[in-house]
Length: 264
Image (cartoon, rainbow, N blue to C red; front, side, top):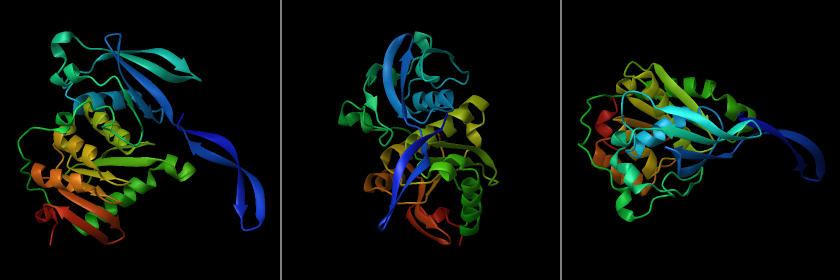
């Protein structure tokens, strides 16, 4: 369930009228690893396994090609509330040793980090020669927008979409959390074993540190956002070799990092 109906009082100047609005659902999901609580994620219920797969990949907890076993341990209102993931101890990555066991709210993907050093992401700088044009960006955003059904119904969800080098859509996911939507797309590609094809990451909102770090870990060289980019996002994009584009609307955009990826 991605939406629910709520009553509200709509006010327009002096006119007041009761209304029924579709509202995007936000619900808590507790993720257990081997029957031990790991974290609680606030998300829009849908594609939960893709969300978990993408999250554990970004957190350096599970990066195996094969998937994991999982089971729904508890539900609330027919929505999964606790999902247990089974991962052999020898397959648990270094990130598990720094498990956060804290609430991760839908607006923040790093709220559970314990120390500043946990924000560090290591790896070789991306050296992709991939380029993109303004027209290609416009066409990809148009396709993404046409598939944002939850946003059309509620106006309250974010979307992330991943395209390959031929501008073909590989995955699109919606969620109340920007980073959750990204995790869901990456998780789906991991499950489908085609993450290596990911070239362009489009997001419907702003870009901050955690989205850039997720793209870097997934080796996606170009991020394009509808809205603003934070200072840390720009700094890390430059360091990681990622082309970062913000304020993308119609034929306007601002390239903040690695502008050489933009076709002349």
